[in-house]
Length: 180
Image (cartoon, rainbow, N blue to C red):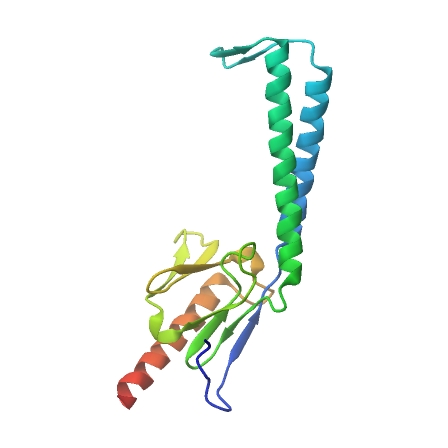
């Protein structure tokens, strides 16, 4: 259930980029790996020695290459499926309202709906890693939500988004104290 925003309340919408490029490139990488490993399994006539510890005869090496080819194929399919799921999302944005924040789903593969968090439930806004942030983490009472730096559009930095969220949370806390 979404908290109701007062009519005419000021909201800030921060558009985000969908991670298609990353997903498609990873799917392409794993497709190439799957093809190369499948070819190696098909044409292999030698054994395989891994770090001088594990030794495979030619038949064992074929199975090893085939298993790696299958795993690479699964990762390729996973990347394509993830890109398809992100395409089904109606909105991919952050919406800061006076009482709540709406975020893209934490796990778009499982549940592609936006997540709305009341501002009073936010316990912390963190930049990970602190020195050179690449992820914005919004910590709620019982879970956390993350926004990747590469999802932000031009004109928005991770620090800027974090500052906007912190300011909104502080405003909500101040109005809550003043009102009750």
